[in-house]
Length: 293
Image (cartoon, rainbow, N blue to C red; front, side, top):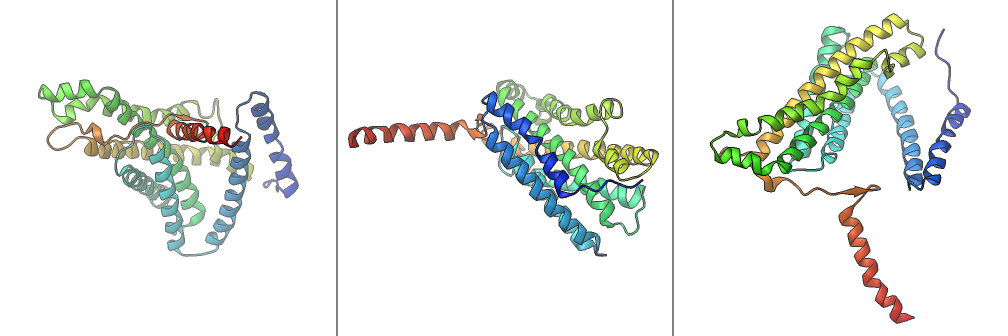
């Protein structure tokens, strides 16, 4: 049995389910109605466009479009990863790009060209979906690891500087934050692996089964993919935290806490600084309005 075709009417029926989220946002006054609509439309348009692009790439026998799409995906993933940490530092985007690009491309290449022995190695039906899954998990791991590392350095700045003043090397002083950051970045993937098949059915396996593949084949593919995802996430976390360490500790064994950007508290997707500026602007305009009256 093949996959069931999903037509436009069925897509509209599925989109109608978002009414549940809209009603909850309205009744609970969450203020997410616009965000829900924008996210829904954006997701639909993006996926439809990706489908058209992939259909074109699948018809080619050229590695350049495949590598190009992979680079674009990596840049977007690095951009997202560099924006999530509450404490940033100069060149965080570059560090995120290096860690995500290296770990994802390396492990995807090992899987496609080595373990699965796909011929040719750039076959887009394998390379692009695998790279997408690896990138998504590496993005999450890298952003969590960097966020944890920079947050601990900012919170425990006094303790770390005391250790350095007592003669500890920068590696010794950062050993605790380094381990906590690595653990934080790897936990989501490990938790997903621990409950996979019991609590949740992963997307790749479900998609293959819906596409008509035998369950045994789908399960084997998913197991292989999860091992690659775990390895890529671990490597990406290691590289990103190591790069952050080299940026925030200098060769003189000093913590360069001034390089950490101040945290912005967010409420409803708008930073506190922006909200204060808007409030100040409204107060400044209020006397003028009273004068005109």
